[in-house]
Each structure stands twice: as structure tokens, then as C-alpha cells.
Length: 292
Image 1: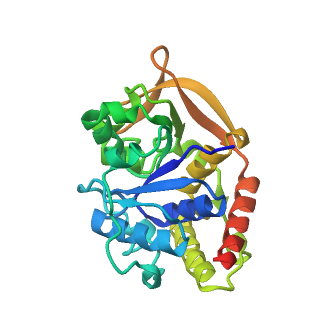
Image 2 (image 1 turned 45 degrees about the vertical axis):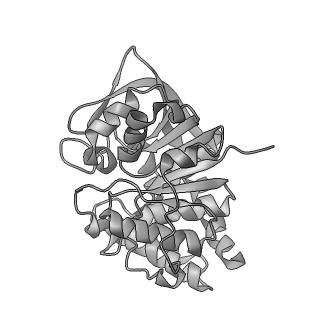
């Protein structure tokens, strides 16, 4: 069966790095990656994306996306966004930005779009190129929270960065699946679990460093361990049968706070998943790195 090509919109980010690892280990048909500001400024997140794609042997165009001022997330992700893990060994010799998102979308009749950072890139596409957006078969968004928050005004980081973009996407005709903090916070890796992961090769050691930094930040914020928000979104895109969803209408205010409403266009919202299964997936992904 031919799989629909995947476009990943990301702002790496420790949990973004693990999400890309999961996508590679699952052999998802990633045919494009779009960088974004968010966890750090675009200059750093784009460089991180380039190094991660090469480290994971993901053969896909990397497109430079939106840049804007965002809250400083160095405390969560480290000064380089990857918990200090040095992936510079895997940096390509030249900039691998090769296209624009609209030109990329034109290369296939259908796409699955996964957003792991702010929604700015997708909102701009909807505004500037509505016709090409009709090629997007599904959109999986990691963002928002109904009962869990990590930013002021009861908001989540990605949605807080660009609430207007969130409103644009939520009001669009795109088929949306939302993976909120309420679900991602249920998938927490302890120090013991992380130390049990393999670390024989350089790639494994680097990703374990990423996980340990994320874990320390999570413990520091009362989460009990590493919280891999974006990896959960990738898993939901690939294995929706492992998640419980509800169909509901979601609105976003001018600060990025979301709420459920009755009536209007409905979207699919994740409400539960299996944290033990997620850990098993991550362990297999770490083992996959030995094959590269």
C-alpha cells in the first residue's frame, strides 16, 4: 500500500528531536521538513533540523520557515535547543533549504501535515496559497491544553507563540487532529527508563543526552520526568488506533487559550493513549539508531 507523504513542521527542541527520531525509526514517508521559530529563534532551530535530518538519514528537503520573537525556552531545551547534545558532526556542508512549502506541496497530490511548533507556517500557507492547501489530507497538531498549561493565561507554548495563527487554522476547512497537553503529559519517562535505553553508538549517546536534559527540565517543573510532547503527536499520526479521540469543536482566544464549544466545525481531539506502549516505541527507536 502506498503511504501518503508526510510534511513535518518543527522547531527543534528536545522533544522535536525525539519526534524526528520516532518518524525515522517508523520509516514514515517524510518527504519534507519545514523549520519554524519557537523553542529558539529560526537560525538555531533550522540548523538543528538540518543536523537531525542528516543524523537520522531522513532524505527530505528542509525548508526555512517562519521567524518571529517567541518566549525563551532555553530553560527547557538548553542553549542550543538540544540539551547541549552536539550534533554538529552531522551538519551538512551547505544549507539544505531547497524550496518553498507551496512548491513542495505541489509535488504530491496528497499530504499528511504534522505541526510540532507554532502554527505560523500553516496559517501563512492557508492565507497565501489556499489552493495548494487542498492537497493536505490531514493535519496533526501538537498544541493547546484544556486542563494542562505551561504558559501564562492558561495557554500552551506553541499556541501562545501565535494565537492568531491558531485561530486561522482552527477556522479552516482542514481535517484537524489535536494532541493537547492533557494527553502528552500522561507520557512521562523516568530517569530509570532513560538510563535503561541503549547507548552504544554516537547517535544513541546524543539522543540519550537529549532525553536526560528533557527529563531534568521536566523534573524541575514538577512533571516527574521527560515529557515528549511532539513524539506523542508523531505517534498519533502513525498509530491513531493507539489513541482515544473525541469529536469536538475547539475555539482559541487572542492569548492562545483553547476551550471546547458546542456546534460549529468539529475536529478530532486526543484524550488518552498508552504510556507503556509509547516507551516501547521509543526503546525500539533508540535501537534503530545502531542501523545507521
